[in-house]
Length: 404
Ligand code: FAS
Ligand code: PHB
Image 1 (cartoon, rainbow, N blue to C red):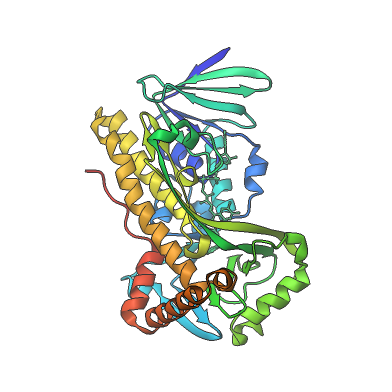
Image 2 (image 1 turned 60 degrees about the vertical axis):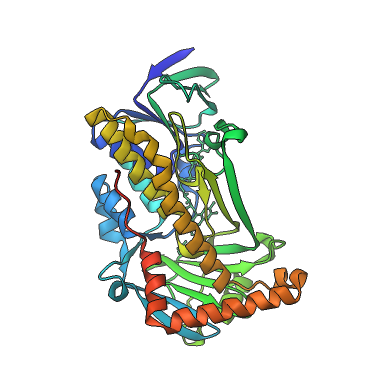
């Protein structure tokens, strides 16, 4: 068996693992990333597009912000539209100057990958059978297979950055963890096209036909979503059908400006709220999607992963720089406080903006009552400054919590 050692073993080379690895390396903390697929495969995933201020600051602290600051678009506001009536949420004005950055997860991941390679840091791609061991001891280790050979990686700590379907969460015995879940009765059909965005800011559209989102990646690349039934398949949706449906859901005065074109990516994602408690077990820490999933309605998925990274990186810095291991126990408590806040906001936005007619049919009057509650709630929040401020504060992201 091939053996090696590092200080922090990171499972997963998605944005969580790469950002954590870059921050640790900046402070001389040795780390190795083990990734199941190839780097190209990781970069082939089309996901998030909105970065909170906290995430942007973390990328700058990691020294990987040059392209993001050059090509990313700062957004001062975001729009909600309700059956054609538009409401702009002035993020900057309502939060005392905070904004969000529109820059694709794929780009951030590519920038982090390149920085890691330039720094000569070790990432083992296309490994299999990754398995953490002795995570409750002072000497945890990971075994894995690469090119048919078994390897052992000894380490001080393990960061499980391996997403919802990874091995890390399963390493916590079922009797030691509690999982919370809400599965939504619809999915998001996403389309990426090299067409100019229909509007300079994002538009979240609530209509009787269903939800739509107009987002973007650059001045020449757009990202759109439509709420679709869970029974739909991506092959049910030609580009032409997608564009026609999107036009019916966007506000009329915007839809008339829509420039369509061939899709370069099209896929349907299911929506769920999910949290695993605790987010640590001995010397194993769960980070990002390994511990929690949100419906993308609040643009929180990637951003909650970043706040987990921020908390864990501060803890590991204190451990290695000051020899303070007492702070390790703070991780799960601090991370979960911000996770649940993001979960609630994403659940709330999903309840207000989506069409629940499918669920209502099975719930009858109770479903109709829920629909009226949500219509009234959204109407209140967009028409009151206090309500818009609540949405703005949550959308730009609450401040990261400091260690005690
Ligand atoms: P990731 O899942 O990105 O990365 C985990 C990595 O671990 C992967 O590369 C995987 O290959 C690897 N891995 C898994 N098991 C392993 C094992 N056993 N051994 C080694 N490696 C292993 N968020 C938003 O904010 N907005 C959005 O619009 C949005 N859209 C999304 C659409 C889809 C289809 C999905 C699935 C998610 C979306 N998200 C969105 C959420 C998404 O962006 C995540 O929050 C983000 O990828 C989290 O990053 P990581 O925690 O690094 O997990
Ligand atoms: C995206 O651009 O992919 C995106 C933006 C905001 C969201 C969800 C997805 O809330």
